[in-house]
Structures are given as C-alpha cells and as structure tokens.
Amino acid sequence: MASSADAAAAVALLRRPETIRERCHALLALAEADRLPHFALRPERLDAAADYVVDTIRTRHPDLAIPYHARWRHFAAGGRDRWGGLAAGLRGREPAEIARMRVELCVVSVLLDAGAGAAWSYTEPATGAVLGRSEGLAIASFDAFRAGLFSGDPVRRPLRADADGLARLDAAALGRAFQAGPGNPLEGLEGRAALMRNLGAALRARPDLFGAGPPRIGGLYDRLLGQAGAGGLPARAILAAVLDGFGPIWPGRLVLGGIGLGDVWRHSLAAPGGPAAGLVPFHKLSQWLAYSLVEVFEDAGVPVSGLDDLTGLPEYRNGGLLLDLGVLSLRDPPLAAAPLPVGHEAVVEWRALTVALLDRLAGRVRARLGRPDMPLARILEGGTWAAGRRIAAELRPGGGPPLRVVSDGTVF
Image (cartoon, rainbow, N blue to C red):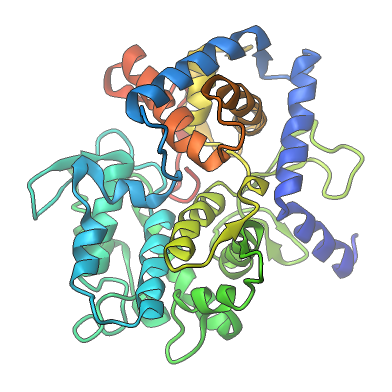
C-alpha cells in the first residue's frame, strides 16, 4: 500500500497540466503504432481537418480577432451582451468586488455546464429566446445568479455565490431555475444540485482560499491576486487554485490517499511503469474554468502568462470533430450506438487522443493562418469547438455527437 506521502505526490502529479499532456500524447504514440484497443488513427486526415478548422475560423472571425474559449462567449448568445448589461448597473462599485462577482458567476455557470441533453431547452424570460445545450445552460445560470439563487442573502446581496446559498440548493430549486420538468428533461439535474452543495462545503473547508463570514467563491480572486508577480499571473496558478479549492466537490470518482481525483480515469495502457499507473487526468471543466477566469483577471488589469501550459479540452465537440472528419475511427463501430459511461475505456481513449491531436491540429492551424503565437484558447474558440459543432450539424439531425456518453452532470 502506498504511503500517504506517495499518494499526495501522485495526486499532485495528476493535477499538473504537463501530466495531462504527457499521458495523452503517450496514448497517441500507441495509436500511431496501431496498438490502441478502441480507436484507429488516420494521421493523413489531419491536414483536411486543419483546413476545415481554418475555414470555420475565417468564416466566423475574418479579422482573426478571436476571443478566448471561455464561458463569457455563451453569456452573449444571440448577440446580446448580458454581462455588459448587468455590469452597467454596477458602476460605482469597487472594481475588485465586480471581479469577485464575475469569478462567482463564472464558477457556478461552468460547473453547471455539463451536457444538458438534446431534449432540454431554456426560454429566456427577458427575450423569449429558446436556447439549448451550452448556451441555454449559460443563460439559465446567468439568470439564476442575477436572481440570487446562489447567495445566502438573495434580497440584499443577490449577486454573489457563497457557502450559505450553495449549501441549501436542492434539485427542485435548481430545476425551477432551469425550467426543467417532465416535458423539458435536464440530464444530471440531481448531480448538478449535489455539485453545488458540495461546492458550498468546499468553501467552508478552505477559509484560506475563500475567506469567511460566509466564505464566498470570489475570495479566490483575492488569493490569486496575491500570486501575481512582475510577469503577471501564471495560467497554471489559476488551474492549481481551481483544482485545490474545488477538488473535493466531485462525486463518485477515483480516490487516492483519501483525496478525490476528479476528472481522472483508468486506461489499461496509460503510464504502465510510472507513478499513478493506469490513470489519465483531463480536468476538462477545471481547465475551461481556468480559461474563463483568465478573462476576469485580464479585464481587471492583471496579465496572465503561460496560457498554453494548459491543454485542449477533451469534450464531445473537439472529439467529435476528429471522429466526424475521419482522423479517428472506432474499431468496434457498434459502440457508437450504445450510451457509454464516461469511465468506459473507449471514452477515456477518445478523450486522451482528443487532447493530443488538438496540439497537432493547433500547429497546422497556426501555420495556415500565419499566426504562430495564437494561443490554443483562441484556436479552441474560433476553430475546433465551433468546427465540431458545425460538422455535427452537417452530418446528424440535431447536431448531436458521434458517440453517446452518459452524463452525470459533472464531466462534459
């Protein structure tokens, strides 16, 4: 049995973005040797995939002024700047307090973003717009935040997310806010509500990160601000704080030395001789949250460095792009017809190959655009994620993914 020190070292290793990248690229090397059990790789299709992504970028962003792949894009669904409208009413408030509010809105919204399912939608009360998937989840969470759903004092201080407000949130209240019901089913509703309650408990457990009286998510802004140096705030510091502070919230996952690992899964061929053998970390939601928080700090005048230390995101749009364009193919095609649990080795393999192949795609996209320094966070937003949605809509009614992954409301 591993010592507690060994377990702590393994957990730290699995939280490093370098480990995500290394283990995913190691599985890609096995794919190149045709040694993976579930997927075959056709590397000659990468150039066509890069062309498709570049075409998507030039169509959506002809000036190449691409924002980060962040939650803030969804808050502007339909061309309506909802955060800008809310912020206009906050003039005169302390800038640091506005930044704390943005951190809180961003965290709860990202953590509630796991796949909604094709049958769910949200009708925005202010406009009557009907929105599904990520956009619908974003606007539903935005409206819920504005209404004080996550605040312990929703009447006097609605625009906050604190331990008191999160601890009392149940599935019924969240379902009402998200308009979920028998005719509008939201996948993973119970899991989402439990995640919010777990988040409240995590805030209470870490006053060093979130403050006290009551602890609030926005305390993370102040903690990270103290880590900014002359070169700004490292992106990896944002991810480390997210994984450290929110690590305990993930339910029903692998545990090492009493510490929950979060978005870490088993693959029989992963790191067979290394520490934490057989484990592949992804931290998809945490990395997307880190990308989203970058914008908060930069808008507050704090530059963020080392953005490409973080990885591409292993979710069904990026991964679906690779399947739909033939870069990857299933060895057992009937798997595409069955709902797969997120821990199924085929899903783990698909996600790992997605992370590694996004690095390969990004190099080709940068070369085609003549922008060698374009951050991966912009390539994800302008290109791969949007291209994955585009090709899915071209190939399947409703634009669903090529593989069906069972969501518990906490992964995708």
